[in-house]
Length: 315
Image (tube, rainbow, N blue to C red):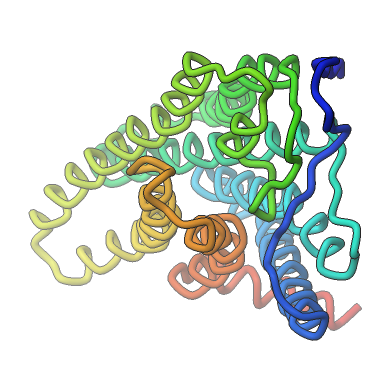
């Protein structure tokens, strides 16, 4: 990755300093233990869902195939930020290189965009299953499911490709301090030697576009689902329909609720501490809670996980 610096600046930089969370040494050790535990639980929870879907033939359906991909995505999502954050808790040197910062920025936001696409596709799958139950097997075929999965991954990683290429070719000088625990585009652009309002506007537009469009798509899908569910005559039928959608809807509200708080208003309106807390919620807490939500609200997943864990204990 080519990084050019202006020769006339007295403090050209070769990397950035991620301030992370200020505090004492003891406080950083406590945060290290806390987030290490959260990270391991996230890996174990989402990994268990992947293993359960792969192991149980009854879960080889589009709904659970999408869920397994979503769980793998969550593992990648937390891994893009948490290991570096944990290292900074125990290190006095909080410097991240240019290439490391740009790679973290690209993967974090690309995986976030991919998560938005997956949540939309999962809502579409639930819409077909509930609103078009007789046509669902012929509409949501294995081939269509595979194409949708590939489309989610490709679309998410293409969305921020041009912005990261443009930012990586800009010159950075002056202060190298980023008051965050990850490389966010706003503080990165603030460190450029020459201000580029057009590029900043493009990036600030690209970030919320998939969030707004896909969140609207999800809400419309669930409005149509609710309209059908309320027409179901039996209470048992309504409960079954709600049980299949409740987990996904809870995850949607957790993820989009925090993201919309973060990007629904100009960044300048948020203090640095609030930015860190909100980012921490949708990047660490939500992936941690997702396996709990899906395993508690879904009987098939709960049974598959229980059988899988008993099998592992038996071996």
